[in-house]
Length: 306
Length: 330
Image 1 (cartoon, each protein chain N blue to C red):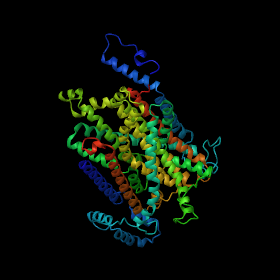
Image 2 (cartoon, rainbow over the protein chains, first blue to last red):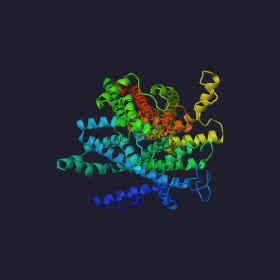
Image 3 (cartoon, helix red, strand yellow):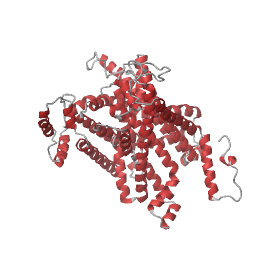
């Protein structure tokens, strides 16, 4: 490893240390140190923050309905319309900014719902074991094998009005099994450790054991699970929107691509219509994946590049 | 081994039952009325509405008791009857899907197998080799983060629209009739190339990254270190690591199948490729619910069969499952 090692960077190790508070501070500083040194997390965070800024500032710059017919028809990017206009004279930048907002909302909500269900199922199955574990495991495996998107298509096709929150909820409700499995396995290996036994024999309730003893010891793991669910939810939403089953109000990045393909932007070579939404999704999801790997390297010293 | 397959088979049958039941439940218990929306698309005299609703209800068997409807559904399915497509003027859904299926399979099967094989090889080769690692890894991350339809759109734009090398849409030229002639097969392959390439590339990225990470993990394992300490050539150690690292990748293939099928659907839509994906879009746009449900059932069966094939492959590769030890708990 090049550069200063964490011990050199924080020469706090005196003969009479080992106070627990001290240790947790230095652990936090060590994580921060590697987070800032590892380029992956820094770059990924920068990309996400930049896109989040566009998602927040963009709709303020271009208020009103992003689908309104405001400009010339099918114009390439110009000073007035940064990303050009669609065949119908809609401002592509306005759609892009509003679509980014929708993407973040779907990712956070969908990923959040999936992570919460996955945690609940994983903790209960892993900690309880026995029959409950068998049943939950069976449920997890069944939902895992069902092709999620195909099911979502059938479900959403029957809805006359579809909202962003509903879409995110559906995605969350179908994409949790992967997280549940991973968390169950982790819980399983942690629950037989001494400190968990100690908590249990001192009469602490199960809920408290899970949330005070087990969960904190896999917090990094839980966070990384959420990041992956976040990215996955965005990709699922994009596919759903692209089949024309996205939100019926407003716009989204997947819906932009759907319209671009449906109205022959490819044949007309109107590249400004379909490139921005694709770059937006790829950048967000890619940044999330890279961040996941970067965090893995921080929390798991064996993976750090030598 | 019998236990292993028995357990797997039970899960798959249970999954099929759950999925088929959901498929049956959705039109009956979702808000909104398919018959109402069917009627609203055609102009019907107001006084005829009531009798038409009754007619459609008896036609679809919706006037019977719910348990009877459920029974009818399974009986019909056992006879291979998935209803008739409303938008394709009453053709049986099974026929419509069977006509589109070869196109989708011709895209999916080669793309899955080739990308899995080459992706794993590339990932294993790149691991712990600094220069390759720094080039293949970022490319892999970008590819695997790319939505399937966007890569398809970009390939169609660059290679079909701008450069004009490949056709932009369709499964074969409009001037041709499907036949077993040489010109038709050549044309078919020409139309197949871009959708295949875009599916292949997205999957390739994912497999390469997965394998690279697994190899690094395996090279850190005790058996690898022991082998190196004994002075084994690094090629041999890597070969051992590869055989171990490939097991989670096989499991990963089974877990990814649903996502991959979804990717093929949207890729087909971009290229107007005459497979299941294009059919699905038409079904959604025309609110053809029988077709939609039929497609869903076909996808479920396809994914379950593929899962089972992967399980068999796993047993062939991992000897532990054969002697009934652990492993293969996926």
